[in-house]
Image 1 (spheres, rainbow, N blue to C red):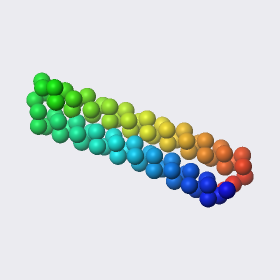
Image 2 (cartoon, rainbow, N blue to C red):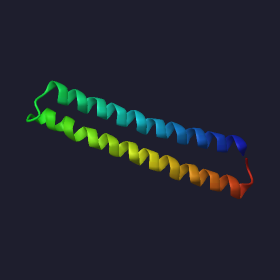
Image 3 (spheres, helix red, strand yellow):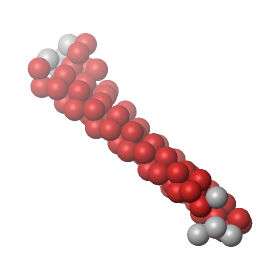
Image 4 (tube, rainbow, N blue to C red):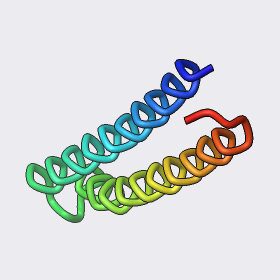
Length: 82
């Protein structure tokens, strides 16, 4: 039972890091598009849109991580593990 809880905690961390990696990649792509294209071009506008979306993805990932961590902790308390 303890190993299952550890695997679940590690999976939660791995999921959060995937959110961070996605947000970082989208922000870098957005800055790159803005750097290489005009602000009035379609690519420049996509870059401008990508940056706030990356922040939103990071916020959603953090919220999901905290919510899932609380659920795991509650399950550990209820089952008497850890």
